[in-house]
Length: 88
Image (cartoon, rainbow, N blue to C red; front, side, top):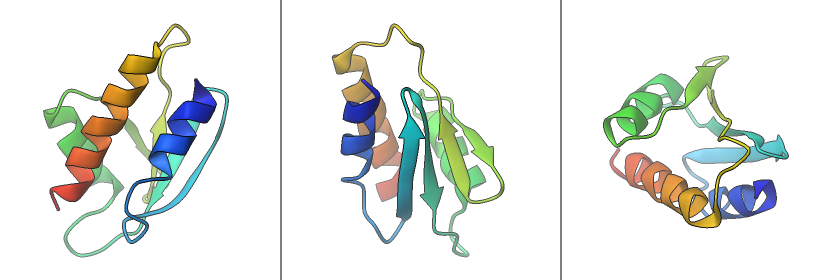
C-alpha cells in the first residue's frame, strides 16, 4: 500500500509538491512554500476536507495511514490531498 500511496502522490503538481518520500506506510511530501501557502496551511485545508496530516519542519507534511488501510481508502486520501493542493 505504501508504494501505491507514493506513486499516487508523485502525480501531484511538482510546482507545489517538490518531493515524495517514505518507507512502508510512513510517508512525507515536501511542499514548496510561498506567500499563499505552506505545509501548515495545506494541513488545515486537508483537515477541512476530512484528512488529518502533520506538518513537520515547516515544509514537510507527514502522512501515516493505519496499517489496515485499503486501496480505495488510499485513493480517497490522495483525492483529498489533490483537492486541497489545487485549491490554492
